[in-house]
Length: 128
Image 1 (cartoon, rainbow, N blue to C red):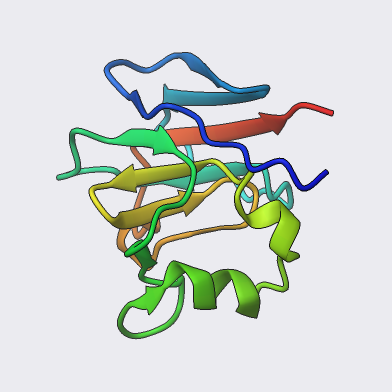
Image 2: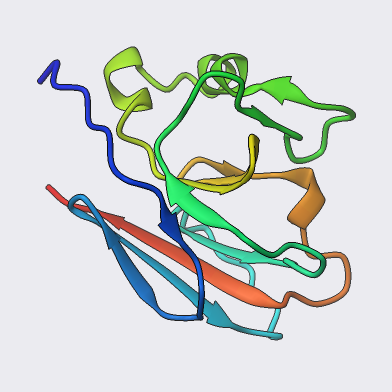
């Protein structure tokens, strides 16, 4: 489409469904560890994180990729994940400042992986 989608940041203030553009993002409490093959669902531990926002990408964003040591620029992460250029601006991110905790439908940060049990279940639905 070539149209750059920029949405306003949405502050996550409670566990509920949020709408950003034509994307639905759901955050709910969950302490059940489920194995899911669905890339659009993630079980995560958000202990110690507050003031989270939903937004599209910005310059300076970085992520601690799951299973890797250290941080990586978000742009490099998306290239490694083979996300086409035109899709990168449409991805909805769960962010803590410039730190990306979840690239909706792509992958989570190593920082919020579930070690024993999750605190939350995340789900995203992209509009057609």
